[in-house]
Length: 318
Image (cartoon, rainbow, N blue to C red; front, top):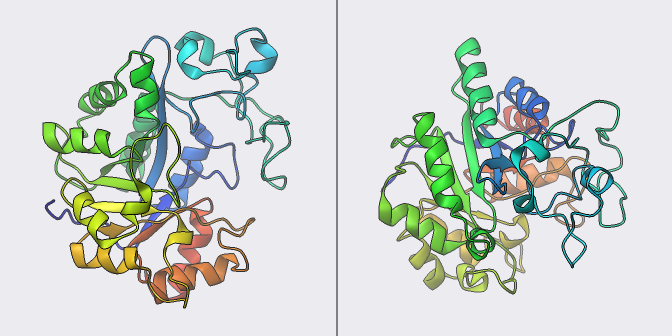
């Protein structure tokens, strides 16, 4: 793939300012924008009427009060799928801090979201918010969009690729620049972006530590030089789990070495000040490991303000 100049090092506000406010809500987007993040991330799924909404999971129960308002609308597996709800119904829900399947907060020290009313936004609403804030501030904060579970949406008979393309067209975000980034775990969807060529911005292959049943993509192969050679044919960069970056001796993994040789930028996930992404490595030490020792090109962070402060202290940005 051709090279597109990216911000370096790129600070990507993971699900907005989700270290402080409920993930993917518009207040979290607005706060992340004040942190001078280079990008604000959007995870996208579809409603039953085909509207792209910003939600990390294809189900609603872990981040909204759907089980309280629509207790009978779960499927046989007990889960409440966004694709089974209209946008009008989604807008009735209140969003809150992420919980586990038992209803316990995943990050207990964070804003619960229950003291105020937070809503699930559409992709259009998030992009409009970023564009408005950019215009008011003179900044050029980008959007970093992940298409969630395209193979699931295909099984449901809907095309998440086309739905996202339609929104990007409205906001004139299809051009060959770095202000809009598309990421996905599904290589077939990224290949479609590359082949059809409607979207001309950066494409990022997300990489898991291991493959998952019913997900397309051989993620173990992507840890290798030969696997990344194939990725380089359709993507500009990779977004690996931070635990994939080092080898057993503490040096750069084969994946990191190969990505750099192939010209793939590295945007690993996720930096969290209140949780160790790598066991035994605290937030500050992880930044040193990533940006000084391994020289990654950017990273997803739940605390974009703190990441910026650390990068300034390290002399990586001014």
